[in-house]
Image (tube, rainbow, N blue to C red):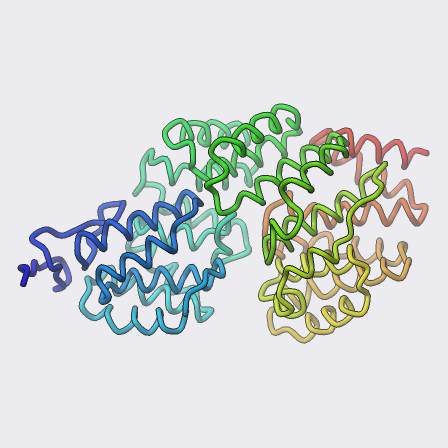
Length: 441
């Protein structure tokens, strides 16, 4: 039997050396299991394919590896990976006893996070900021829902961990994303580009740069760059549809509706995109497309809804998903199901779902009944609360798009002009200019 070597906290490995994770933290397992685990975590951090298979391989090498089990449970919970979450949680809990203090804290944080209590994860990161898997879990990004929908709280988590990472390329992607959320676009762009020069597949950095191009109205250059990345490094990303959605936003912004149709057919239509990704990216694109001046022949959203489970649509887990369910049902013209979603949101114990998603669903229901003026009024009352739904400014912008379209449809052109003037001052686009011309009539 191989020698067992003591490591901090009283645990041991089965080899003569203690393996570490990607950021130098000891792992209580074999070298083979650690290698597979690190490969899986790297895939998670870069938002690339292969994470689940690599993590599963780690517990094949060492069935007692607590962090391998915990990571699989986490991906099952956060990304709908096909794993038995309850079994992986039980195994992680059982085997954590033989691990280091840090690993026990890690497992405790994961199990509580899955149960809906994020406090242990936040406290864990105060003690172990270089636990990158849990840091990426804590921050709302393209890959994880995060532990808060309050931007400033997420920013604080990243800022507290910054000294532990220095110029690390992966952490730079998280930092770049929050910098663009803060409106510090030049800084976000520089950080993201520096990160990608070291790791072209750095998904968070790619995402941050994508938002910078969009939020600064740099649509032509942003689309050229993003299309090149989608065609080269992008195919390995588990979030390729989301990057395609971003490319389509550039095309909508420039009113290149033929390009949007090609993008839809090639990259965003079902069954190529399905499930929650189709709800968030594909259905929302159809709605924005339909609202765009000059749009015609927009595909129906019913085919998208067919790829999504009934629970995700009718009983969404978060306000963010409720927003997208309501938009998809409105785009499909399914008033009965939208009415049911509204009732479900009203009964939710999640205050964001009840206080923001429910009235949003009510406004969209009014649109299906051609009550545009009433819908515009309701959306106006919601405008100061939409941020609570989570996601990015680019994603939540769909609510303002809908309000503008409802104002124009109800003849309230001056109100629409005021909203459009603010947007054009901040970020000019041909789409908003055409809407502005329509409002000026």
